[in-house]
Image (cartoon, rainbow, N blue to C red; front, side, top):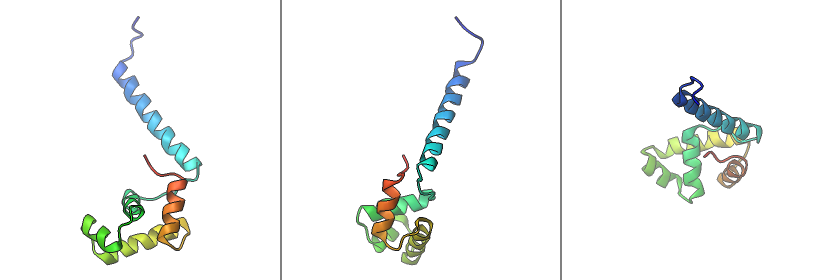
Amino acid sequence: MHDGRDPRITLVHASRVACDLRKFTRRRAGAPRLTARQWELLRLVAAGHSNADIARQLFLSENTVRKHLENIYQRLSVSSRTAAVALAFQSGYPT
């Protein structure tokens, strides 16, 4: 039986709602609000890369990497790369 609704619209709507729900759940769980670039840097830090390695991989200067990390530390209220990785990933690593 067809109720007159376009199933493609329903599927798109359901997908958007699911995405919004994931974002809301992460925020409610206390997930750090980091930019995509900041998460990218943290993933590389977590993998054990040095600032120089990260700079080469992302085509940035080492000073830019350092500044990104300083901004991450500030957002997370931590003072080291180890603390930043631990806090960020335990409280809401993005999928």
